[in-house]
Image (cartoon, rainbow, N blue to C red; front, top):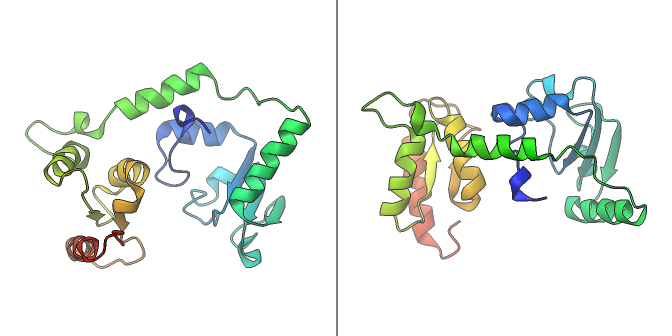
Length: 194
């Protein structure tokens, strides 16, 4: 898939452009995704859609939602096979990847969050580039859920996925700082980061 058409995260923290595209679609093909309540925005994204779920683990297929078609197999191998079959059958693109969508995605990416901060304040996206610069371009980003969650997930999971640590499974208040300290220590303890 061309990066020009990368909608980013599919789920409750999707960008408005992604939400529009998801809601307009009539089919979801999920490769390796659990299709849980967060992925499907509490079921909203799945409403009136056919769902194809591909997962390596048989017990994961249809675990969280009824699917139209469930395929057990390596997601990458299945994706490659589907593309090959489409090519062999001479089935062309759907036409959904339009220039208009490309421009909307690009405009969203260019509309950084720091432009919406109050004068004199610093949000995640305005502070992150400075942090990255001061850490020789290899920061370990750790955060606590609430205030900057959507910004940090959108920005870092896409640009630096191996350096982004998320404490979403734990809910203790104030956990973000200790989580970040632990992640930073782990990053210095091995050459492969984690």
